[in-house]
Length: 102
Image 1 (spheres, rainbow, N blue to C red):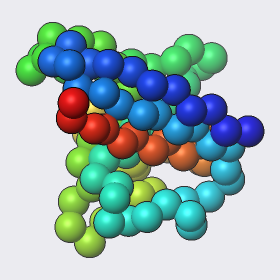
Image 2 (tube, rainbow, N blue to C red):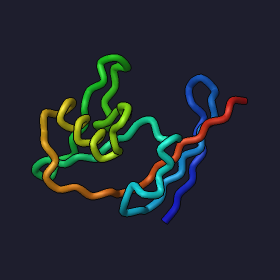
Image 3 (cartoon, rainbow, N blue to C red):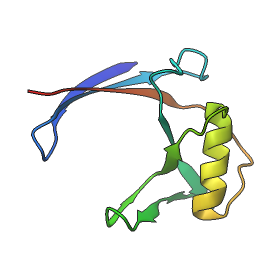
């Protein structure tokens, strides 16, 4: 399944989001991917974290550090932001975000 949606941000920037059902990171273009995020569950509840800089709640994730794989980044971010370890790992979707200035 593929879903494509357009969104205009608060500052007037247009974004195009594309969601794809996939089961691995193999098709992601590493040069275009700078951040990764995880949907995490613990005891049947979805885990979200507080971002003090933006004063918002959101998914666990962050910037890929030099030399890290997508999986290594997600596992590190999950541990850093929630102090949890990953036991069950499943890739759910690929999300491509392109923006245009207009």
